[in-house]
Image 1 (tube, rainbow, N blue to C red):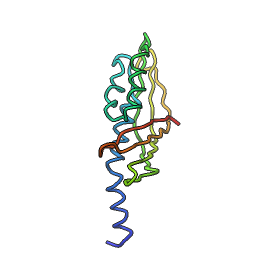
Image 2 (cartoon, rainbow, N blue to C red):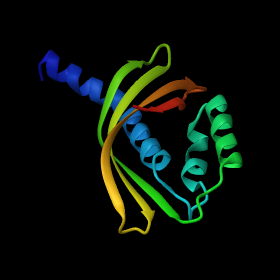
Image 3 (spheres, rainbow, N blue to C red):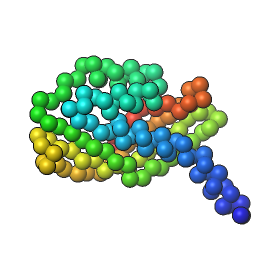
Image 4 (cartoon, rainbow, N blue to C red):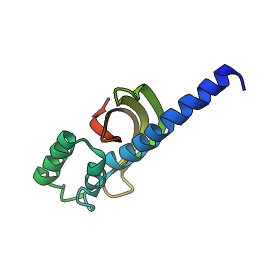
Length: 135
């Protein structure tokens, strides 16, 4: 293997865990059903930094689910690690997603594409989501 190939393999290995974590987080975080009582957010709170987890818990505690059916499913299409600093323990990842929203009934749905920007910090050796912003 030449130096470029080795560097490419090393970069892929370094970004593999953050790619996987980002994808898991976004697909759960961005999917919701009023029948599931915010399980999507409860599932990912453990992946969040304390401040973001507290903010998210507050949303769960104060939000009211709509009376009629509402659901949204998010699927990750691509993951782009924009910044990764292992030494500083920080990363920024932008993911392209396909989102499908259903209102009143599952058959009444619309599909669109949306990006989301995730910021990570490494805390006690574990990557934690500091923020998630839909773009």
